[in-house]
Image 1 (cartoon, rainbow, N blue to C red):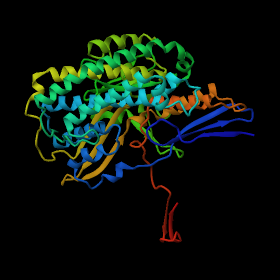
Image 2: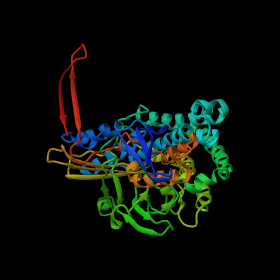
Image 3: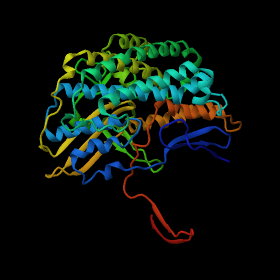
Image 4: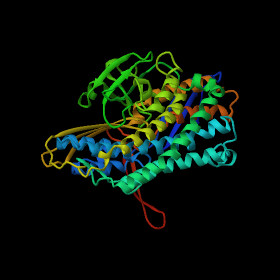
Length: 474
């Protein structure tokens, strides 16, 4: 008889999800799904709030990438104000966003995924974790902790706190950067550069050990989407959207923020709270695309910094067109860390970064605003509508992890079909099914929504544990 395997929860990811693998009567995989089981509903929670509260409110969506939400939200509010913020403010926002990129990528690579890479996909799960990594590879474990700390310290230097900083506001930032803080940040960068250089060297030497995983970890043709600047370089703060196909051919280019709805639509499925964005001209589900570091390196024509461009050239040589294997998200993250540190150095070396003019003031001048930035996991869209009093009437959030939902589900099926034998299961088989999800580095706490009414059950108990009442909504 047909059987179903359930991996619940998926481990070493941010948030809660499960995987179901469906087997036929001969134990062969005939379908697999990645289910996101938690619901947050931030789009409804912000209705009725003053729009200028949105950046600080949205930063609290996520403790891993609060800066991404802070910046996308502030950019949407800038559009409602109808102001052009001072260039120094934009550059300070860029520095904070890049610092978050460094710390988040370090968390994903060193803490969540490197136990698989260094201890082995088939290792004992009791030891295949950060503690086992620290025991067998103490230097690499320390490097990961230090690199993440460095990113968080830069965020703290700018915003006053490492998590949920309120420094980015509509119209710019709250206060300028002092020369002392600039010099302290600059003094930290060489250590980070040394860490990421030796990590890249180690990772590239070991790629031959993972050829089977590279071949099967969500390795298929798809579209890729990311932001590029006017020089067609890597852009995390500002730019236009570009879509390329598996051959690297540009499908859509110079897509302005206010036109994103012409290219991106969202579908829902009854078995997950994570929506399924797709490339609208191709329809659902044919319009599958990927975002994040792999996609960003596939859509650009250069990074824009010296060392990152050298690494990017090696990376692009992995494929004849776009690099298709989602295993290479790990490689792309390391290149982006290198880029982030180089770009922070460039921005801080500009004397204008100490300008005192860092905020534009205005009231609401538009009823609608769209803000887009590149979060560590991919393109993040905040779309707000307000009334005449500046109160939020509507919000649409398309979260980076959501963009990858179709690809994650197809990747789970590809890996399960290749590795899982329902007649003789092994822990290593199932770990590889989880590992393909870890390659995408999903952040599920901020990305889940629902369509229509959810089922709800509320029970009232007294102090003795006796149920007094119950209300249900089906």
